[in-house]
Length: 213
Image (cartoon, rainbow, N blue to C red; front, side, top):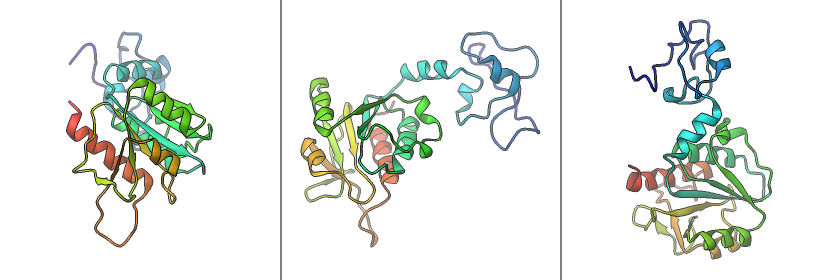
């Protein structure tokens, strides 16, 4: 067993159908561990590597390995998909999530993953575009608009920001104009579009398939 990352305790029969119970026996040493979790169990939605770790320790470890792509989402309608996109961004280890428009966003779908994911806010598309230009990061808009290139044939730079719109209307004209490239997901059925959070997960996975190590 790796002393730096000891195996977590097995699930206690009194616990719910997920997570682990209190740590049995002598507690592991190290600042990364949360005494409350060691004492009472850890039922958070985290991988086994991070069982019993303090939230700050998890974030610090993720920061050592984050991928160089960012995710941006327009937030004009308080779309419930935003939380799910944040959750996917955490799963695929995005650098940062950028919320454009309303500062408040529907966190229900995030399932608390926003605590482990860097999230920043931009008041307007112009402010977001200015940030991307200053950072030298190309903006890749994801929407099934005229001229969009299917993502399996499109260029996805290793360092980029993937820009997603709202469920239904998609990206605003202003956001599309701020992007250096437009990509879409090839579809084969009768529906015009797929769910916004599902589309975001597909694009992030495609980025990881090409660039993640």
